[in-house]
Length: 215
Image 1: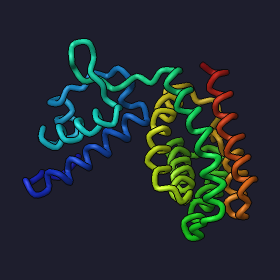
Image 2: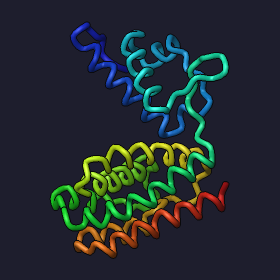
Image 3: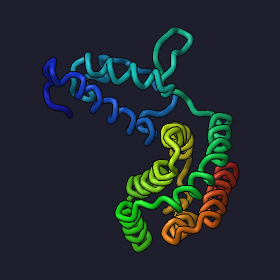
């Protein structure tokens, strides 16, 4: 999967392995409770154990890998309680972030996100990975344009927990959240702070209600 590493590139390779593992955890390809065997994963991702060790250590530090009763590493299981607690914090933060982001636009980046949204909207059966990529783009943009340096890393970590939980559930809607995202995007494009705040609140409440109905 990755090129052979040298001591000079070992750290960079560790970052690449970290990104690949994180992507697989978020997509539920490494579901909660999966035992982490360093040697097996190194073979699977075609790297030596050194960059794999770096990646696993970082993921453990971020709380996505935890120790079980035997002190072995496993992928963290996100419970309904974890999910609801994370979503509750998002509901406190992201509406305010959306309101602030509406007054601090990056027009070029916002236009790219809008075009991505329109392409998904026109596709009757888009690839689910593409839908989740768009979700990341929009929510990351809002947190980063909020003007608060603490907002993005905090929201990003909360969204990791909610994403893992949601992606382990049966898919009900082909394009989850797209209708609510349209309202958020329109408010951002128009620079309407209170409309953006209300649209984000409504979006997250719809997500919460939908998950509880399906759980």
